Length: 118
Image (tube, rainbow, N blue to C red; front, side, top):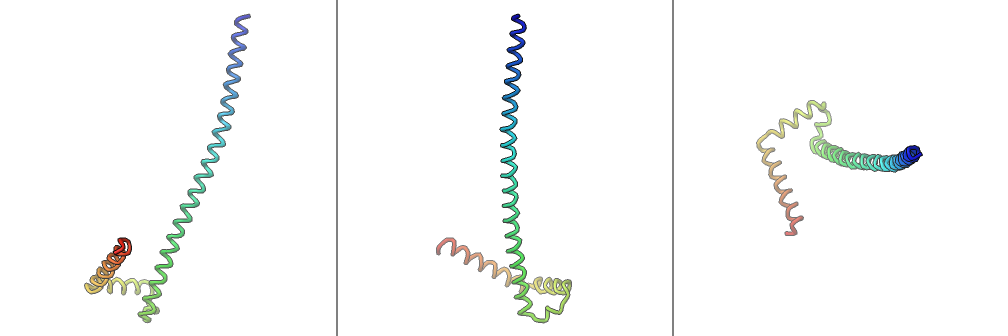
């Protein structure tokens, strides 16, 4: 009789544990789904931000390319390979390197003044 009582108590504890485990499993499943949705939102946000930077880069490249084309009208007739070759030749000139360096230094100086409040 005591043996049956202990077995029944053991079964109750096992069933209770099983019920607790089921509840814990359901709770963790809900938490997992919540974290999956959170991860997807973060991925979507990252893609959105990266897309924005790509759009800004594309816009910058188009406007700068248009500026070159408006200044040097003859470049419209060049193929892409010819245009790249021309730009490479021009930008490798010592004078071009000097002008580029001066422009970037001037930009850095002005940006530094704006940030520093000078």
